[in-house]
Image 1 (cartoon, helix red, strand yellow):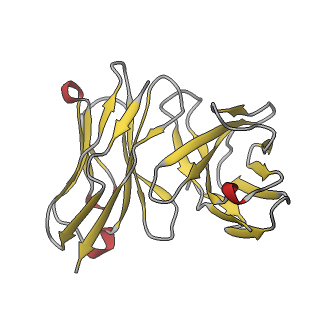
Image 2: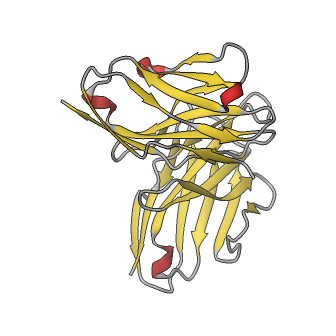
Length: 119
Length: 112
């Protein structure tokens, strides 16, 4: 159990276009999901917390107008990179929080990631 | 600010060798601790977690970790590694919230 999927697994786009990445929890409901960015040979950097039915909470330094997050249902969160530029090329990973009722003892389960390349 | 340190960035071992990967965190309050593994081309998978109770935690695939509060450490161990353990290992901590702070990761290469 606790499977999280992401789609697409990789995407190449032209500079200036927008790209949408989906994150789904397949066998559990997740009111909270997270979006991370992973640079080569570096750790995961939390970009934002996605909450079902409310606005996402962005980490300091992350442009909310550039990285649009929509948590439309208890099993789906989307990240849209708007007007993408080459510096947005990265590996984007989502996770879904699964637990018994919230709190810090809940556990994050991660998706396989999406490789974005902006030409 | 909270931080997590993984001092070993790269580790190379022969099969059957014992493994210990270090993880230290900086936070004085109650913490929850996690180890994740990322096999080549795959997603992060939870190896084990510690919330409370017995500080020696056993996880999947023969891994274990020991929480030593006085040392702010949560080191990952395995008595005998296999070639299939080649992966990147991440330590993560949270405290009071569900947001994780990740370490920079340790790349383990096991030679057959």
